[in-house]
Length: 249
Image 1 (cartoon, rainbow, N blue to C red):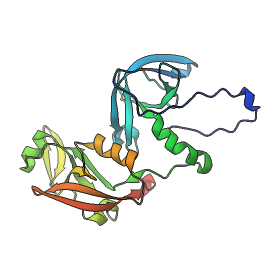
Image 2: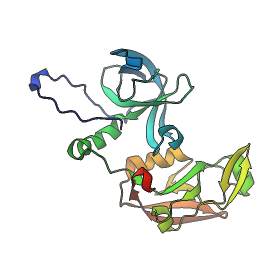
Image 3: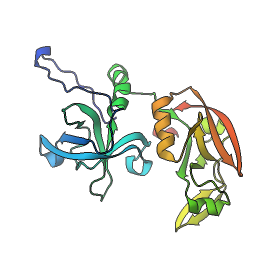
Image 4: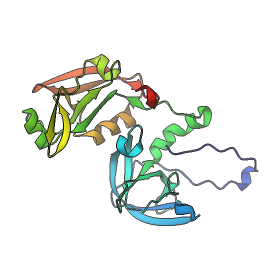
């Protein structure tokens, strides 16, 4: 969550914390404000709007696990902003700034306050949060071009390319890709299951899947995952796990 827990020795009257409010009512187009120390310039403020909701920051950007259900904003972020508050027009905290796509302009991300509120008690008590559900699979969003190569009419969903041996998806019988092909010059492993629904909710891609797992599930919970396998629709029960340390995936 890009957060630190601090212990301060001062009278309570000297604390003036910002109010954290729910991010569930945010809408695309809402004004947002960031405060941070870009390039060491303390107390700098910038403004923008929410340009998308429910995004997923992928592993190639985070360098670790994906971050689900994030806020996409046009507010400029630079080194020194990460971990600062994302505020609404009333000065209330609606998120924590976390990342910008390298080389981009006008595309940055923040973790929503609802995620922070779920994690903060555990962070204070234990120094960590172990409530992120883990499927034990990696994949890519389906496209028309991939569907054509696979010989299927399913053009939406999340195509499983790899399954972690012994992980939740593996134990449930989900299947990863079986052959390598190239689509628009991109190397892709195809032939795996295509996740199209979880607990009856339609999944159009990674954003839907990761946001659902983050918002509505916890480790140890059983979910019903519907996949397309060899042009047949099947549903499998999966007991979700907790994220293992990065080196043990």
